[in-house]
Amino acid sequence: MKYDFDTIINRRNTNSLKWDIAEDELPMWVADMDFKTAPEIQEVILKRAGHGIFGYNIVPDAWNEAYIGWWKKRHGFEFKKEWLIFCTGVVPAISSVVRKLTTPAENVLIQTPVYNIFFNSIVNNGRNVLQCPLRYDGNIYDVDFEDLESKLALPQTTMMILCNPHNPVGKIWDKETLARIGELCRKHNVIVVSDEIHCDITSPGKDYVPFASVSDDCRENSVTCIAPTKTFNIAGLQTAAVVVPNAALRNRVNRALNTDEIAEPNSFAVDVAVAAYTYGEEWLDELREYIYTNKQLVIDFLENNLPKVKAVPSDATYLMWFDCQNVTDDTDTLTKQIRQSTGLYLSAGAQFGGNGKGFIRLNTACPKKVLNEGLERFAKGIRVVS
Image 1 (cartoon, rainbow, N blue to C red):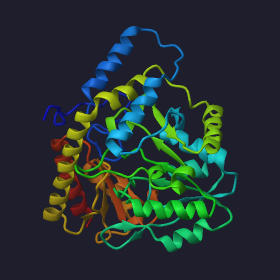
Image 2: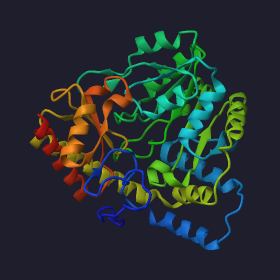
Image 3: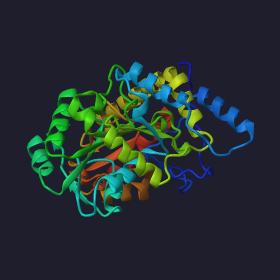
Image 4: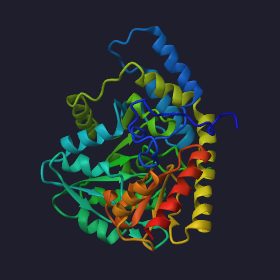
């Protein structure tokens, strides 16, 4: 490999949310990677920092062109320049859109188990969380369309937040599934907000389908949130984009983001996004290979050491979703016990809703030596409490 993903980087004492924990603990919970970002991005950051002046910034055409070029080449979907709006982050964008495109006490539908911050974006804005649990057959998750339509049809349901690809289950939604979701949402006048932040972190040979690319229903009734931050491990630089093809909807979203003051870039946000989408392709392809082998390592470890714990098949994200229902129906308690007995810090599944109480989420985006240590701690913790 041209790029190094095996070197262990000490992240303690760097004000890291992930690593600001006890010295003997190992965090494998929050979704950021323990890899340095691409050297090409680091060079751009150093160059910009060397300028020494960090005043107010604009969004140049180069930013739009970088997004347009990347999605056309990598995902076969060409944005128009006017569809794109700069934003400081996907979560701020979702919260702003929920606040400005719905009214208090309306329902915002989510397919659970799903990224837990969706709950915050809904509840903190005085809207109702309407869970539409994904159907789980003991192996994979899928959409329960009968339940979905019944909930979309409710008069108080005005928005759906789609996770595409889906966190935490690692599902890449196919074109047919997305088309049906788009058709039902348009039929029942429900706006779709599609969080596609994990879209570039797919297994080699696998690609995601942009929701807005699928059909007229999907394109004209959607707000898509995208960013290079998850892909290139630059979340702390606060850079993202919102894609809204429908002009009338775009005007409302643009007003929302600007009213909430989350549409102005810091001095690094534009340059890192342009660098990522201009120079980061080779680094990303090697990262995807590395994460894929890490996931296979996890699957083999569980089969050989913890047959009661099953990894749900995953084609996207660097997160893995463990079915622990043969061990416990309360992984909140289990993860606390594992942390107490081994120092391994994992995400309990209940916070993701749906059937999450019997599941655990683990982050595999780390050097293999660290991953192996985490798995050994996990096995020890399971044995201690079993």
